[in-house]
Structures are given as C-alpha cells and as structure tokens.
Image (cartoon, rainbow, N blue to C red; front, side, top):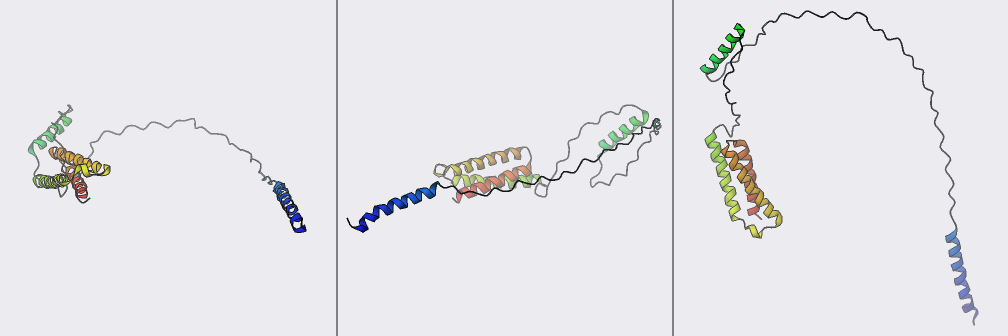
Length: 194
C-alpha cells in the first residue's frame, strides 16, 4: 500500500474520536451569586388610645306638625284640559280635606310616544307597508335553491323580519315595524344582487 492510502483510515478514525470526545464534554456555566436578602424593617408598635363612649344619648326631636306641601303651579298644556279628569282631581282633594279615603279614579291609558316618522299613524303604516312590499318583491326574485347556506340563512332571516314587522304593525308599534321592515329590505336587496 501506498503511504497516502494507509494514512487515510487513520485520519478518519482520529476525526471520529475527536468529534465524539468533544460531544461528551459538558460546558460548565458559572453559577449566579445567590440573591441578597432584603432588609425587612421591624414592625412599629401599635398604640391604641382609650375609646370614650358618651354616656348620655341624644334626646329625640319632637316631630314637626304635618303641613301640606305646596306644589308649583302646573304648566299650561297645549290641549284643553279634560273635564272628567278635573272633577276626579277635585273629588280626591275634597276627600283628603274631609279625611275620607279618596276613590280611585279610573285608569286612563298612557299616551303613546311618537317620533316624527310616526306622528301620523296612517302615513307611517303606509310607509312600513311599502317597504315590506319591496322586500317581499326582492325575495320573490331570489332563487332560493341556488343560494349558498349563508344565502338561505339570510333569506330566512329576511322572511322572519317581514313577519315581525307585520305583527308589530298590527299592534301599532310603528317604530319597531319600520326597523324590521328596513332590515328585511336591506337583506332582500343584498340577496337579489348576489
């Protein structure tokens, strides 16, 4: 054998030994110094003074005589006062003055709150019905079977809004009916444009 071929296996063996020897060595990390404990101050002494309880109790105050409270004058109303309501108020005041129990006045329904859009019931109901009609026409144009799962869900939601708007319209809840009708129209328009 030639000297160059004989030295080759020896070089491989030496390289393998050096690699394994360096792989087994451990790196020694210098340990961090232990933490220094904090200096805790001593607890201050608790000085509790004597509690003084007054022996005499406050005298009860005599009750003030019952005086009728005066109410401010009522604001003038825009519409003429109801004569039936005035007699009921006068009867109740007379009953209080005489010391008798006042007779309960018949309950009157609370006035309906109105917005500008719902001030005129007939016109507001027509607007809601017009919006509902447009939403139903839009839904009629939509191919329900050709819709995706989300599209079908939107179509069902629009139908539910139309139903809720119709129920609210029957109950004269015009603001809610208009809100539901607007939502139904928006959903149905988006379905037509898909």
